[in-house]
Length: 295
Image (cartoon, rainbow, N blue to C red):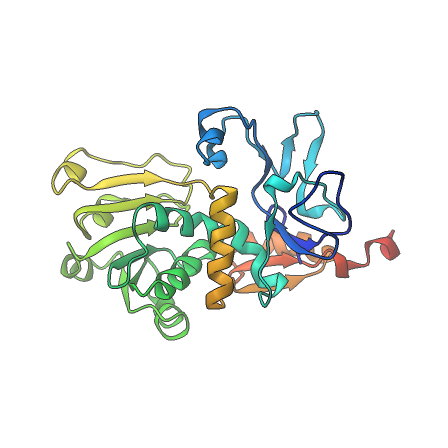
């Protein structure tokens, strides 16, 4: 079961010197397949911030080849960029964890937004947002979903287990929740104001931006000076962070909510993605797509 740059499968063979894995192991490959291994980021265990990171798909590898990612029927990756999928995690629900999962898990760990009893806000209830809710609840946190769409309340509270729901365009709701949150994970990729989100934070609260709006964020200085509030960004996570996230997910039975499709459905899936018609990730079953028979 695969997505383009979030791939899980079974090892078919290993090269000389490989000690971490063997044929038959269930493994995963995330957003990137290599890095320079010599920069400050690589040396400090944050290879996901390497300036010459080699992405798993639509990138150029150090040997000049174009990476094909999860649309390949076979993938060769250095063992240092491969993670082990715990027993019990289904392949389809585990695949999106390697991008959406680690993208929210990594900053939650880094900024201490993983402590029982702390209050976490999650902006947006899409592929990343629903994972942030699941991890937050597994950490024992109070989780509030913040959305512009009131119709997502039932999904957030009743099905995913969020403790509360805020409509971001309701000024009274937002005012009542001001100063109540220890941290916020902002997963929204459409342009939106962040000052109202910062007002929800307690003093020294942390806002982490993991969505990627095409328009610039508007951040007046007064919005962070008062209360010593902080804004950070995050890009997926290191290999070690990804493995830790998978281990945690395996322990708590956390998977992404997915719809599994075959390769011949990809174009339709893309059209549905443009309409935001998926809850919450499409996963392509490459092994079950009978590509050889189709050829």
